[in-house]
Every structure is written in structure tokens, then in C-alpha cells.
Length: 264
Image 1 (cartoon, rainbow, N blue to C red):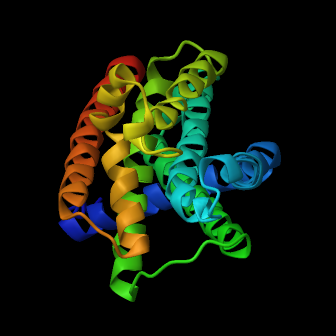
Image 2 (cartoon, rainbow, N blue to C red):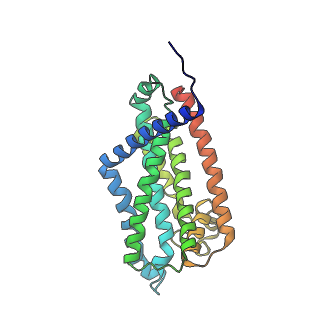
Image 3 (cartoon, rainbow, N blue to C red):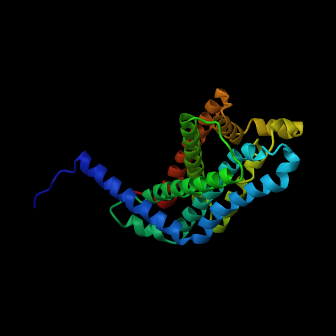
């Protein structure tokens, strides 16, 4: 029997095919979980309408509050959508499917990649819907094409970062319910930022937290890009925070998966 050598190209093709299978699996799960998909889109829209039409008049009587609040709503949308990943990963780790994957000639850790890519696609769809609704209720942008591209790039990086973070949380959680609780707690972080009101309007002790946490520079970078009033330092801080959290989350996620699942 002739043994054919496994080339680098063959390994790359096999890896790509395996990832495609797991990505397709996660996307199908997302489409079947219609309640979570609808809530990932509906909740940010409801919050935007609430803050714009109920609180907006008191916060900004001039009627421009929708332009201020949209970047925060986008990140809240991304955070909520990413939190679903923690539940999905925890479900895979507790329902026995990982053990079945380990019996196959594949790296079962690709299941995490599938969840991350599906979350990115799901969140970009939700973000597009949120921006569309924002335009309908009065959001206006002075951004150029390249500024829009820069804002979208930061949003994609933020989604990717927090999806890997939630994937790691799903791995350490003992059940999907616990993963959901951890994810819900993290969703309060944007409220302690400049998402809904300027940080200088907050009490001093909260202001210090709001100005020095990762979400604020990300929001300010997106807001500056979309309104044409960009402070470059916010972009660098946003990129720095996202890359540090992304790297830490990826390492944490990979190490935890290999330890718990005994992946190949």
C-alpha cells in the first residue's frame, strides 16, 4: 500500500474544510435559535428608542442626543450578541458533543472557532440593523468613506475581542445558565462609560472608573469617526485595549479548552 506524504497544502485545505464545517454548524444553530437572534437585534433597538425619545429630551433638549448615543448602542448590541457565545460554548462543553468530536480525526478546538465566526456574522447583521434604525430616527453622520471604514473596523475588532472573551467564559462556566449569568454581568460595563452621558457629568469616583475602562475609548473612537470630530488618542487606546483583551482571551480560551477537553 502506497503512503502519500501529507503536504502543507493538504493540511491547510483540511484545516479550512474543518473550520468551514464548524462555522456552518454554528450559523445553523444561530438561525434555529430565533429567540436569541431576535433579542440580539430587538433589545438594542428598544434601548435606542428609549434613550432617544424618553430620556433624550431631558439629557439633550436640542434633539441631537441620538447622534451621541448611537455608538454606545452599537457596542451594547455587540456585547449582548457576543454574550450568546458563552451560552453556546457552555452547552457544547456539557452535552457530550466534544467527546464525540475527539473520536474524529479533527481538532475539536475548531468548534470554538465556529462559534466565534458565527457570532461575528450575527453581530454584524444586528449592527447593520441598528445603524439603519438610527438613521430613520435622526442619526446623521459627517464621516467620510474612510472614517466609516475605520469605525466599522473598530466595531469588528470589538466584536471579535469580546466574542473570544465570552467563549472563554463559556468554557469555565459549569453550565449554560451560569455562563448566561456571567455574560449578563459584563453587559453593565458600557453603562459605566461615556456610552449614554459624558463622563464629566458623573460623580468624581465613578468618573475615574468611566474614563479609565476599556469601553470608553472604543466608544469615543467610533463617535469621533462617525461625527468627524476624532481625537486620534482614542483610536490608539481603543486598538490597544482591544488587542490586549483579544490576546488574553484567546490564550485563556485555548488553554482552558485544552485542559478541559483534552483536545488533539
